[in-house]
Image (cartoon, rainbow, N blue to C red):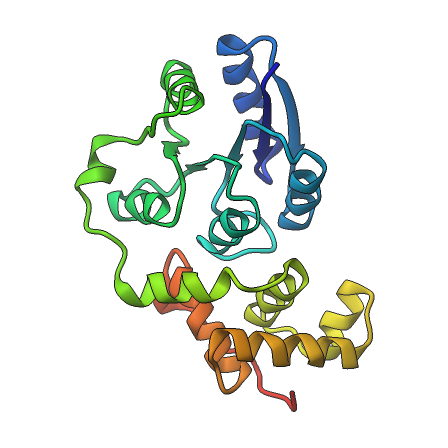
Length: 222
């Protein structure tokens, strides 16, 4: 019995995905997450899952960062991106960062079913426009390579830095001391090859859906 994970913060779309999966794989076990933190816990709990259907706009992550990091932590788990961002360049970037497929959210139930069965059979699936689009650039691949070295907690801290939170606020959100957050920030800077948190956020921002829209965070003593 295959196990499929669905990660999307919109209940209605999770319901639509459940319906599409049930039509082609009525015996499948489905597990869901509505945020990146919930997703990381789910993937740990379901380490033998057969497929993850991942929305790019999950709360707690920017762009392709969760895809890249999960591929590093769980290389055995095939990931298909399901997104309303249907530009060929976005689809191609997802494939370049390790997704085995890309399903536009505008796809009908038959297309969803075809894509899921194709991937479970061991093949890749994406609209033809994705294959024809230009590949992700070298700077983006370099940022992805650095991001893979982060621990899950460091990844969370980096995402919070990108959201503009200060050390004290991050500590409150994670339930740890400010000193612990500072230690995480120091490790993040070292692994990303950054001199400060602004550089770290801009490096990670290369994996954003719209890298030019990334806003540097406020600086404070690290």
